[in-house]
Image 1 (cartoon, rainbow, N blue to C red):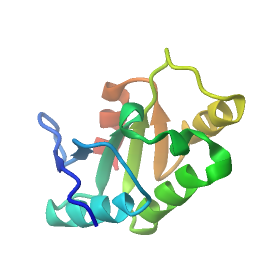
Image 2: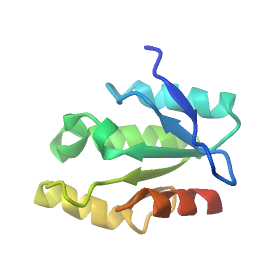
Image 3: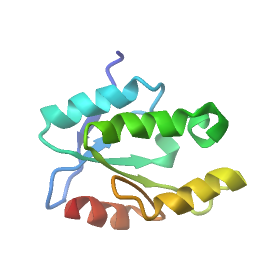
Length: 120
């Protein structure tokens, strides 16, 4: 596994892990799991700019497999998707469904994502 950089998000009431680096492979999900346990949290914030292009192409199954690895370890994942960015129709539907998710939820802004994670 590569040494993906993570840290605790500053200024939150509860510990939330954030990735500093970009996600490069499915194995990075396990790096996030390990880092979350080391830092004593089960909350992760991701940003769309940190995700590889395969994440946005549902036919690659990257998004589903990546997120599933995290939720299998009972990690709450919030991902912020830039509203100005264009996504395929199918991926847009995926984001829409994820706005109501229990362990993985999508957001248009970081403050909403942090608020949800703090409640988990």
